[in-house]
Image (cartoon, rainbow, N blue to C red):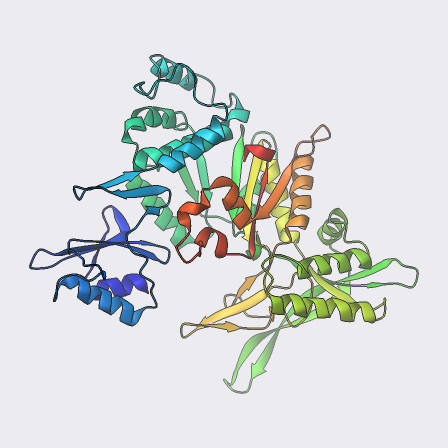
Length: 496
């Protein structure tokens, strides 16, 4: 919407370098350039402003700012002081100095807690005389050498790359050669949408990365399953598996459970029945979907319930209470779930309870772990979604788009394929158990338990990013305040 508005105002996006930068040149030579970052605009202009922040009468800058204030709710924060770790100093001669002093100090504190080496002097080159020899020696090693050093190296190199591409071009030479060490890395991108897979291939081709990245148009589970059948098909060497908002679309199985008089758990599973009915309105036949239940027969459902420890009504009620307290749940949602839990407690112990079980996630994780025995995971997804009228545990949100508006279908998943989006929340405590079990099973009887960690997205950003650099003056920070209902899970401990 904002991009369309800027184009309507006569701005042109810099498609050849950065589509988030727009510029407009006026006949009298006045120039306005705008950089867009989330909901922040960085405006660079040639007009000379007075103490009230206004340019000369009739200038294009004044006209643009008036249009901006008239069409949008904005706050003028004055001259920019920093953006994404890049600090801005305004010099007496009118020049603007960009630097990353604070960012680099934090890197030194983080990676060199005891300070730089004694032999490093202010005038030293940013690499030693043996630097190129060390690079050649490293490139001569087999790709699987020192797998425990890969992620720490990537972490440090990523920080250096940001400095080199932003303000520290003096380190571009060593950073370039260090990046070559990852030139032999192989990347596989799984995309179930044929159209999006084509777009990704085209972008990689244009950027010169098509030799290193393979874009596969296929379901991730089927792809992994084909590679987990035997030693000849598995992917050798260390692999890092990143899954960003994947699990919310994975299939789930619905179960209804109640406690028998002897204290054991009776579980039935839901079946979706498809039948053809006559529609009197359209005078034609159409498919109708209904829900029925049968005694639990699916071995995968039983296996997931047991591996997650959901084999008693107490365990299910504890899970229900934990979801009610999940970060990201608003006051209204927390009250709704709290009332549901209270009513459940007042009801008979034999009252049935319904839950959606992440069987699709369990199967996907198992296949991926067997396809890539030396693996590490990074998984980000929705940790909480609004509770649904059914009151079922981990019930999905069902929505569709009509006329540009989102229509909430109140959790009714019995829809024609393609008619609606079905999004499941992920309970990361349960996910950690699934990841741990799948990783251990893929490594055989001698496999050691993997270390699984998960935190809120905000806490993850606080740990791995200088969040002060993305905060606006009114206190809003997109890295902390957006997506409060998401979490990030990783394996491998502090090497993440």
